[in-house]
Every structure is written in C-alpha cells, then in structure tokens.
Image 1 (cartoon, each protein chain N blue to C red):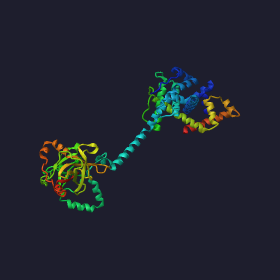
Image 2 (image 1 turned 90 degrees about the vertical axis):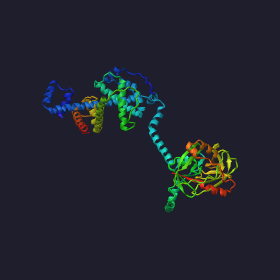
Image 3 (image 1 turned 135 degrees about the vertical axis):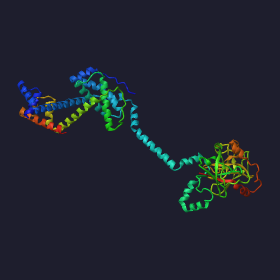
Length: 188
Length: 365
C-alpha cells in the first residue's frame, strides 16, 4: 500500500551539525527529504496539502528546538523522530476537528514524543503571544524592536534608518517601545 | 529608564570592568533589581526565540514554494485512495441512509399487511382460508351494538369471539374425525368446528400431511354426539375431465353451493396432487368437499389461481386416502373409510340436504 519513498537524504549527523550552525542549505535538504513522507501521512489520514505543510513545518520547529537545546540524542533515526512528532501533532489536530478522532494509519515506526511536544506547545503559545503583541505594538516600534533585538542592528543604524536627530533620541524611543511591548505581552 | 539601560548594557556585555563590578554589587544587594534583570533577560530571550522562529518559518515557506506538491502527492498517494477516502468519509452516511430506507420499506410492507398476505398466496396461488378478524374489525366500526346482539344471541353456543381464520372441513367418520386443508389450521392456537346449525365444538389436530395440504381434526368436545353414518364415499381413482362436480363450503357464515366441472387433471403449475376445477370458490372455501353427481368425494378444495378466471384447485381424494394410510396407528385404526354410498340416484337438492350435516366451518384462533 505505502510506496517506498526514495530521495537523496542527508545523514543525520550532517543535519544536526547544520542545524547548530544555522545552515540554510541543510534546512532545504531536510525539507525536501522528509516532506513527502509527512504529506503521505496526512493525506492518507483525512488531511490535505495545506495541513501537511503546517504539520511538517511545526515538526521541523520541534526538531530545531530539540537539537539547539542539546537534547537530541542520536539513538533513533531523525526520520522516525520527525514522523512521530508529525503523527502526534496530526492526531491532536484531528481530535480538535473531531474528524476521525480514533487513530491514524501508520507508514513508519513511531517514537514516544509527548515530552517534546509539551515543550513545543509552551513555546508555541509564547510565540503566538509575542506575535500578537508585536502586531498590536504597531509601527515604528515593531521595526525598531525587531531591528535591535532580533536582527542585532546597532542604535546608530536604527537612528539613521528612522531619521532620528541623534542616537539618544532613538534610544529613548526604543526604551518606550520596549516598555509598551512588555506591558502588552504580559497583559495578554 | 536608567536602570533598564544599565540592565541592558550589563546583559549585552557593554559595561566596563568597573561599571560591571558596581552593578553586580547593586544586584546582589537589591533583590528587586536582581528580579528585574532576570525578567528582562527572559523577555529578551523570548523575543529572540520569536525572531529565529519567524525566520525559520519564512525560510521554510520559501522552500515550500519551490516544491512541486501535486507531483509529490502523485508519487506518495495511490490513485485508488481518492475513492477509498470518499468511501471512508461517507460510509456512515450511506449506512444510515440505507438503514432508514430498509426500515421504511419493511415498515410500510409490514404495516400494510403485505407479508401476511404473502404467506397466503404463494405467487399466483391463493389458498382459500378466510381472514375473519379484519371483517370483524370493520363490523365493530360499523356498529358496536350489532356485535353486542350477536354475542348475546350466540352466547349459548360456545365461544363467540370470532376466529382469526376460517375454512371448511367435512367428516371422515361419524365419530368426529374431520378433514380440512393443512393451511387452514396452520399455526392455530385452538380450533373450533361449527356445524350447519351453529353449534361449535372444540377440535384438535391429530394428523397433518403438509405436502398434500391435508390435515385431520378430531372433535374433542363432550357435547358432540356421533353423526349418522356417512352418506358419501371417497373416490380412489382419478376423475375424468369434464365430470360435473359441486362443492359445499363456508365462504360466509352460511353454506354456499358451487358447481362446475373438472377442467384439468393437474393443478397449479402442473401439480399432480391436485385437479383444476372450473368452479367459483372464495376465501373460506378451503377444505370444502368436492363431490361428483353420484355422491363420491373427488377431492378437497384448496385454492385458486389469482387473476385467472375459473381456475380453482382441489387435492385429489386419492391422496387423502394415501395420507390416511400413512397416518399414525391410532388415527389409522379409528378412521375407517366409508364404503356405502347413500346418495346414488338422489337429486342434487336431496344430496345436499343429506350432506349438509357433515360439512363444518373450521374456525382457527
């Protein structure tokens, strides 16, 4: 029933090293190697391509998080890990939609990944909250905060970009923005 | 603001040695500031997490754009799966719909009495027992009073509640053995026979031969007194075509005479056990004797063909005798076939007058 999926697959240690180095190339390889497997899982179990995309991307996030936190032990195959996470996520999605909340038809071995998913859920919640807070914060604060804290730009660059007369003004603005962001974030 | 800036500078490692030492001392002494440092640090980490995640997602979306999804899908999903998916999705609905349809069909058929009718008519063949309860229902609706009077009038003569079915039977012996069709008494709780004068007697089935549609009853009622000796005999050979015949039966609560002739030596669909008779019979005639002009019993009326005029059927008397020979010993010993015919040479009116005491209405409850 299930077709063998043949593709050029990067080795597991290659992937882990790539993730730790933040390699874009590895992300692409992982995506191309494992997405078809998840597509198969989802489509054969009442889902569509968009569901597959969401579930797969979420699984990759879980993998990245686990590798970066140094918890990933190579006692299981990477493929099995991704599959197990996706499977678990999809089961949860199904039960939320109450579509066939029983079981899914499996194509691969499965690992227990509940612990990883709990952590992921926590992070996911924070992520959504932060996203909401930033949207709520509005421009130009959003860009200032993102540039400074996420893209690691210097105050000088920001000052020029937004046309502040001096760095102090920009700093002042950034401070106000951060205070507001904190307020919004913790209020939610 | 100053504190926040200091915390930030501290966390980003932008302080000089001296500033750093001073700040650390401040932090150690003031738990409030320490708390602020930790809170700020966590928040910034969350912000950074958000950033990396956001970037990862947009990178993945970019990769996703480059993939040929339909091609991958074709590769991993078998074609037949689409149909199976539809089936999986809709099979519950289909099952429910099918059950409802079945229920509706059988419910309608049952409530309209289709099945009970089915039993009576085996394809074109219509067994001629009469269903009484329906008629009585109508009677009740028409006039309750009338029925009450009926009860009063008949209360001295045995049970009044009408049977579910009725047919006809006739005496085999003067001691109270009666023959009728097996389909008349099939599934009976209790059986009563009623003579021409309206007297009911309790009877029981002593023997049945379903394949010839023959049943033998015995009157068990204490009020029953033996009949005079039988006027008719039973013909052992097969009757000739064209022979004039007549029958007496109870399609109503009164005797009805029917006259006709033997039209074929075989019955429904070539059944050699029966004759085909051109005679008018109706429900309730089942079990009536079929007599020739000399007073011999040729057979037992058992049914007629639907939608065909003048095609009635009677079980040949030959098979009645055959059936009796195969009966259990106690029945065989009791039933002695009458050999003396006292009807020969009489006019039909006189024959009927003599026979009428030997023909009974069989009521089945």
